[in-house]
Picture 1 (cartoon, rainbow, N blue to C red):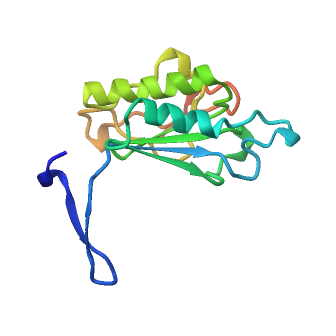
Picture 2: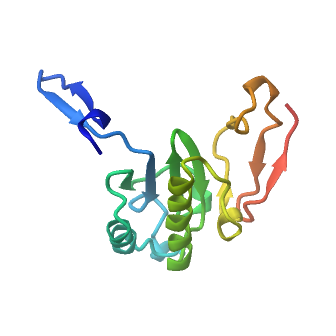
Length: 163
């Protein structure tokens, strides 16, 4: 990134700080009340694998990785929230290294395409909507957006509700 890509922020103590804006934020529920708690019957969250893959792929300048506490939707443990250019994409039951690799591949595909892409089939069954609102399809004004989608908790399959 060049100097022009930085944002100057004045901290509350008066010190000027330069920030580099990120394209995405990957938040992994790793230290919450249920995610990763194998003693409660949930799959392990491989924190080191997430971090190693993040470093291996060189995503630091474009993507923020956060190993988080509880993100909220506890009934679908091992939750990951990917925010790509302000758009939230929720994933549940990310319980294996192949799914984590698919998640990173998906993120890199969006970075390469320079836009949001729908989740690939490998991850589609893991997605759900945790909010009562959704984003309109690309190029569609909000007033013309389709009915909101709500996913079944375990299957991740969307069903359409009325407006």
